[in-house]
Image 1 (cartoon, rainbow, N blue to C red):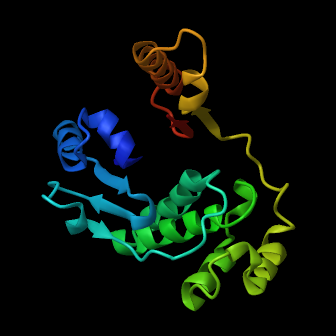
Image 2: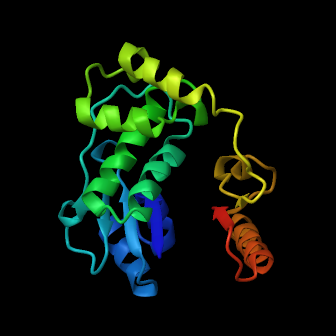
Length: 207
């Protein structure tokens, strides 16, 4: 199992604004690998006990780039993380993939269209950062265009059943919203998703 979140999200889940304490609370309720996203500091993974310092977790190489647009950064990060995790690449490599994909997302326009192809990712990891505004890097842009233009509208997505209820800001802006109501709504969403999934493969959630 795998639990991924920002420091703030672990604060909420663990009931403490001390990240180490929050992670330890989550660890007390789950044996899953915990991956804590730390913004510009990258991310750390904990497979067992949570140490006294986040810096003692397993980490991967980060990439110094210009932050241009944060839309889709988390999903981009997760795409790289899933690649490494599903390939059993080890956490340093897995987090390097995740950090790289997140870097592409925040240094380009848009969301999904900004994510790198595998060819582009491999080139970037081998060559490194030449200029911090990746959207203006001519080599990367050429590879991105040439490796994604034929697949943007391709593929069969009919078997993907993903329920997203991670819209915190939109909920907070609604009249009458309270933390208690927001929590109850998300619990209801989770219950519904679990009931529909009913132990079958091919289902996922974004919460």
